[in-house]
Length: 119
Image (cartoon, rainbow, N blue to C red; front, side):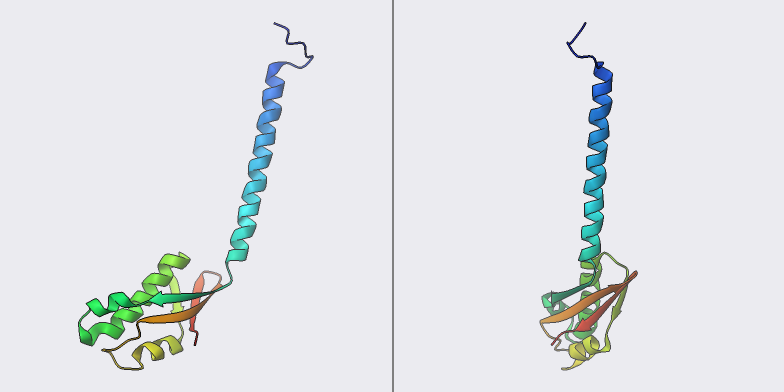
């Protein structure tokens, strides 16, 4: 069956497939570049409402655990380093009265996430 063209049908299909592969590669490269930009510095406001469910004498301990959990969930990293200023802010009013929310600046250095207190 002659379709009026000099090229066979299979050649057209291979060209189409090659174009699709090139397009997919360029999209993947753009995603990699975006991820590179995404890493850097972010500021998070971490809600600590769930801390009130803990016994009064454990609330600041629970607050530190909540901060770590939140950062693990949002940065997708296991290695979290909390600055001493965060600890001081949480424990400022003792173990029974931690703040209801805290703002932290998060930076990523290789696989380590570093969190600093933002005033």
